[in-house]
Length: 151
Length: 408
Image (cartoon, rainbow over all chains, first blue to last red; front, side):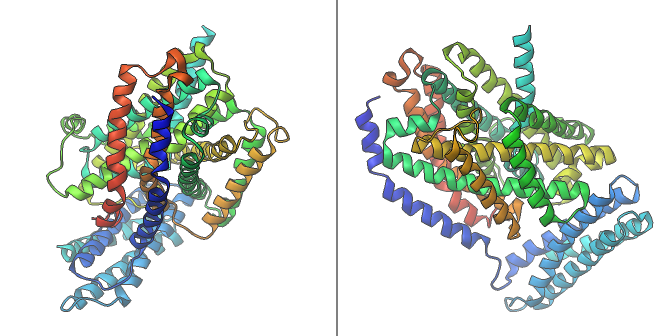
């Protein structure tokens, strides 16, 4: 390995690498954006996310109902998952939609809000098994409805 | 006998210390999305980190200099500076995600307010780094991280299809969403071969005073420690596949990952998972913190080392304190630690060639390494991995955009 070769390689690259870093940062910012119009693909993705949250909520509530969770975990995790659902509800309730799918988008927004409400109930009553059982039962139909919207 | 015991303890610590927030997020998410189909990528990643860590440790043992010292000496100022800047950017993102992860785990365990816990986490990490010696840091967080073995038990209790698990270790191309599959494959490679790990490993070798007599220990540490650590990655992915995939759940929080142990094992599984994640992520925070300070100090020629008193290496000490404060402030802005982890892992993939090329060059430099220069196997693997690294570095950002950060 000759060091001149090493030097040559690196002498050619600083500017290219700097440009790449700038592009990488810009791309990262773009990828992080979540605005714009809700089209069919976005509706499908968001409906899948609602279904995922409702299914996870059902599993989570089941463990709480069985007494297999801790109070702090139940309260904080319900808050975290509820915030994700509330963000989806907010986004689906106010963003512009592609023509013809607005009713479905708004329905998805309402479903997300209902999922957020169930998580709020768990958050407010982290040790109440009866509440957890009721929340578990509520999550099932919500997940099914979100699944239908995702198809 | 004592030496064997010491090696065994070191290996245990390495198993517990292998998994960081990137591994947790990407392995479980990959399992939840593709089941066991990406297990082979973890194997590729683990062999890659073993290959380059062994080189780093050898360079350190032969030259008594850590990788960044060697980078500055052998590849020149400009190229070294670019490597330094990219390493520090990725490091800062990773550290922020790890500190956020520590605060989230503390919150899930205690229920205390998140922002208070961010400050508490930063203070505790600073005290540990300041007061506790290097060996004990490794032991405390490595052994605490062993609680993550609960995911191995959970994986078995979830009764996965072991035939499908076995098939997952055979490299293959997915027939469904190829872009998403490629995105997760790249994320898993990036999580396994994170740059800070090799910088920390080589600097640690210098801190522990390795010489050519320790080359066997270096090889053993790299192979067994990372190899068995990879076992935890398999367990996490199997849990993701067995629990979340079938139910259509996309785990988006650290709490959801812990649920992977709660569902099959109940409350004790949940607590062990949270404690394991806490120690693993806190340990990785310290590794990342040191790595950032090591890189800058070695590049600039400052005195450095955890074994030196803060007064003996003031600029090194100041660097890690500043890095920790910056990470704490960044987490306080409310940035999502899990999302940031995904960005950090993908950006680290872009920076991988800048990390690994200098290592490969230095390990091949006869003037530097003398008779301990790379052998045929190390070179074959090193070049093979460098080609893979180049490909994934070029495709990481386009895939991140095309898959909307893995959302499909």
